[in-house]
Image 1 (tube, helix red, strand yellow):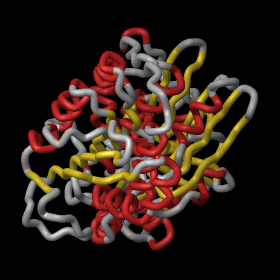
Image 2: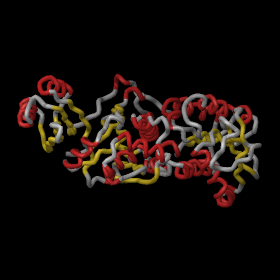
Image 3: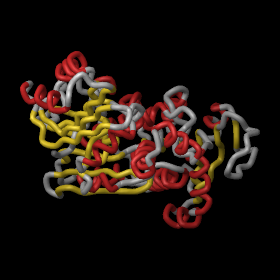
Image 4: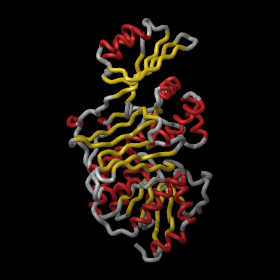
Length: 418
């Protein structure tokens, strides 16, 4: 690495990549003072060199050929192109050449992270990924510090700003899901294809990374519980609120008696719960440690500058550190996984022209051994029956019987507390 200049390559100059460029330029003096060297982006890989961008970049610096980045003798490469292919092949080739990597790519880490960690160790290069989990919240650095003395029992939170914005608009402004999603897309919070966000994949990738950091292992992605918000509607949010709860897309990673648990699901939180107060595109992470207790971290989890801030902080940090081997990432086999324990559930029952009265339905559940602790019943002008229950002991079999005997559709969501 040259003594006067740190040569940086950039894979991707989209929203985050543009933010990285802006941040390096605006913080150049501070970075130079901190590092004793000037940080310069010397080559940037893009799909289209003629595309108009929100950030100015010299045409001599941009290229559509990865070989140009590889030949630029860069010291560090910032990978913000997203996806697994071709990002994995690019990062692998750079590591093999001895180049340090900073990435915000949670999908790449969740799907190929174990291999990248092994490659980094083999070639004695740094792999930094703070920006992959919660945008501007430096949660990975915080967790590394707490792990020196604390045993972290669980990490949970709102890890996707797009879905949190959609749920906020649905609840506060009574916007149907499709309208709130379109609004999120117009504001740049959601991609044209929002699948990864709204189906819970994005939050699951981040939970996987958190589990690897905290526990040194995680479940395979296919073995984790995952449910998104794409099937939620206003009736469910309204009944949940009447019962004293707010629905959030909650991601959780925990270890109990040696068993890893990993889940992403719309979850009912008591209205006074700290995570229930997190609105719009903000993220929040709650950490539970055996010594420190519960801690909550909140901030903007997405967008140009919050994510770019984490990327550049990673870049500056690794330049001040000697290489030490990364802890190996492992996956626990699915056949050893203990199912997520969940005592209380929110049962949303709905039917048009129900074949039974609310009393008959509740009597059926009582006889079936379902314990109901809270309930709300609604009829609307179209004779649609809606029942919201916070209950214990509700199973898939109960849902099937309700549909068969009463024409009721049942949707079930976890509840953080009764």
